[in-house]
Image 1: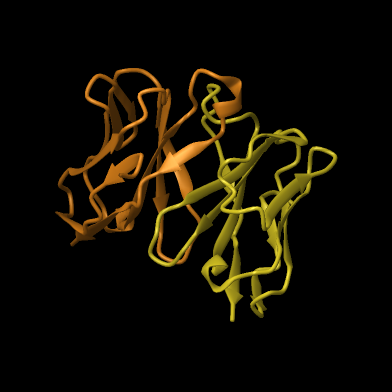
Image 2 (image 1 turned 120 degrees about the vertical axis):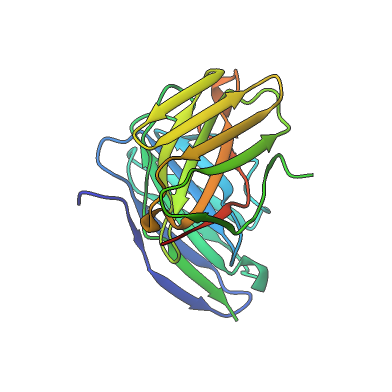
Length: 117
Length: 115
């Protein structure tokens, strides 16, 4: 596809269940980012990948959160034992190279709206 | 204290006027600054970036960076109703390669352009 895609678009789950969110970046983009946005809030950085490696995981809110990227392409964000405070829109973005390295383009996916009951 | 601060607004601007948005940051190690626009219910889009002190112009948008005072601003000239959105300021990209790509975001300023 031409843009960043995410699936599912909506996910409703019960507290305590695990969820997996998927992101397909733009082909050839080496940098991939995960953010979350709670209602009426700004963006919260979670993690970014350069290729398959994540130089900085400090944005992950707790050890219930993990992410991986394989083949320099698709990434999955996994939340274990979901809590109500995990409810948010989870956004994925990609760029040809990491921002802050002279890269000035970044494209966002449509997001996954997660609701934990 | 958040690392990146913005006034939440709303900032009401008459059509055709200049909208001025400000952002301050606390991390002196931040090297790169970005402005995003987010329409209600939509994903953000990156509209401007700035790395050097001074002004950077792109069409109707001008970003200004003052590292000594630790502030970034965005000017929108000839504001149009289509500019009504929330504008997010972000900073990051320090001197180490591990920090590239990690941005801290402000909560955003809502701009309303009135016809």
